[in-house]
Structures are given as structure tokens and as C-alpha cells.
Length: 378
Image 1 (cartoon, helix red, strand yellow):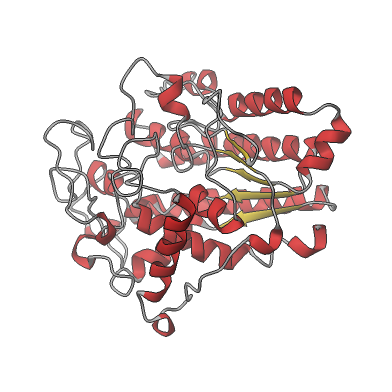
Image 2 (cartoon, helix red, strand yellow):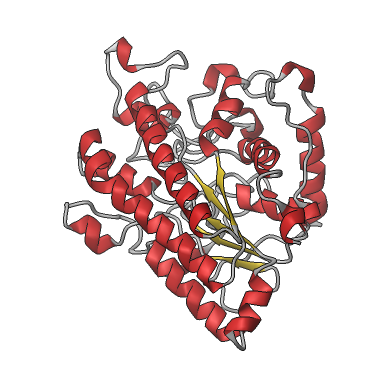
């Protein structure tokens, strides 16, 4: 039933707009030709399908309460959106059920595992603590998720050769990860952008590169590594770093310096992916361009059926110029939800709506389908 619903949603996403008007047309594409039998996902809240709410089962956590999940599941599942995430849409285009979270111990993992955790960082909490950067949600990091993955494979593979045979047909997605390290530094620890560039980004990129190398060593052949979003267009940054200096904003009314930082981070990641491909000629590591996928939706908001007048305001939020207040977050008492989330790009000021993720997924599939070389490795 869920697969049918998502198929209908994709169909509606595609036919609802005059595609010939769009610069990067969102034709309905699929990863089914790749015949991935398994998907393994590492990352943060952009991909978490329920790990944080199980990690902190005894307390209320981010994205653990209604109205999260209201559009698709009609209840909160731990996904930080009103419904489906990019990983859900990817699984559907491959022809697989949604990935279950690793911490749902009795779940069916026959189609892969989701190790992503909301709030997770690329760098360990101990490293960040050296600079007084605190993760308020979890101590989970990319190293922890790699440990979970190793434990899972050790318990399900009889030999290394057995694992390699199984994993060479799987799709691995490492990220998006590293955004929270930057977010906590800039917005909670009051660090400068120069600090982020010089002190945080080099080890973040090396940590991601190390994680990809470990997956390749384990037997992976195809790995997708998403980059960062243009967070200067997101309500949380527009609110927290609001300024009267008009030169701080670009032609899209996004914070220029924050977006430039994302571009800088993505360029470093691009470079690392190039090195990984040189070092591993029998595998393919592909960059997933979340930055431009989002900007495509953002620039074409009206043509895609979004409300252009509120494209920098979340559906679920309250207060200020951008309908966002970090002290009264979505799900808090008295925080309203817009009547039609499908008209909004942003869901809660940090995360996006199901409809946005759906359009982004189609853009991303179109962008990576040739690069992932499915026929070459089949």
C-alpha cells in the first residue's frame, strides 16, 4: 500500500507542472535499472527514519511528536518532515520497501539498513567538545554509525568473501553528514566562519572520506556521498543571523556568506571524492548535489506549485520574519501548522517538506544515473 501511495505521489509530482518550462526538467526517473537489492544509509536527520527516537526512547526528542509525519504516515515516525525523506523516495525508485532504522531491533533488514541519526555529527563529540561545541541531541557521530554497520555485517555475513559478494550489488549512501558540526559551531557555540573553514571542515572531510573507504574495504562498489545544502536560504539561519546589511543577502534573499561556506565545504568534498575514485578504480563514488537540487526547487517554486510568497518560511513554525523561533520549535504547544504542507518548501525551519524532498530526489536521480554506472558493475 505504501509503495502504491509513493508511486502515485511521484506521478503527481511529475504531471502537475509544465515540464518544458523548467531548466532541469523533473521527468520521472528510476534507479530500478541498477537492480540494487540492498541500500545502506548513514547520516543525520535528512535521512533518519527512526533511530534517534529509539536511542532516546525514554524522552521527547527532536521530530518525535506529531505533526511530524502528518502528511504520509499520519503519525510521528522519527522522520524530520511531514512525511517522506529522500531515502524513502530513493528506496521506492529502486523498488524496495522503506529502510528500517538500525535500532528497531526486530525489524526486517532484508532490503538494507538505515544507520542515520537525527542530530548526528561527522566528528566525534569528544573532538567537538575540545572547542566547546556541544551536541544537544545525541553523542552519535559517523564513527558510531560505522561501528553499528560493522557490527551488523559481522552478525549477518558468514565470511568476508560472503559479505563482499552481497555488498557489491548494494547501494551505500554516506551522508549528508557534517552539516550539524557546522550548525552547532555557528549557531550554538558562536564560532566564526573562518574557524569552521580552518578547524572543522578539514577533519569533517577526512572523516567522511575514511567512512567511504571503510565501506569500500568491506565490499561496497557503488557509494553515493551527498553534499551540503545552501543553508543561507533556510529559516533557521535567516532568523539567527538576520542583519540590516542588505549586502549580506544575495539575489534570492539568502545569506551570501553562509551559502559560500556550503559551496566551500562541497568543493572540499568533491576533491575527496575524486581522490577516492582514483584510489579505488574498481568502484565508483558519486557526489549527490543537494545544494543545486534544493536551489532548483527554490528557484522554480511557483512553477512547481509552491507558494512563492512563503518559500523562506516553514509550514510548521511561529514568530519573526521567517516564521521560526528556536525556543518554540515545531511540535511545541501552540506552534501552528499550515493547512497544506505541499505548498511549502520548508517544513520546520531546518528540514524540508515531503514534496520538496520528492522533487529533489527526481533532480538527483537525473544527475547521478549515468555517473553511477549501473550496467558497468552489474
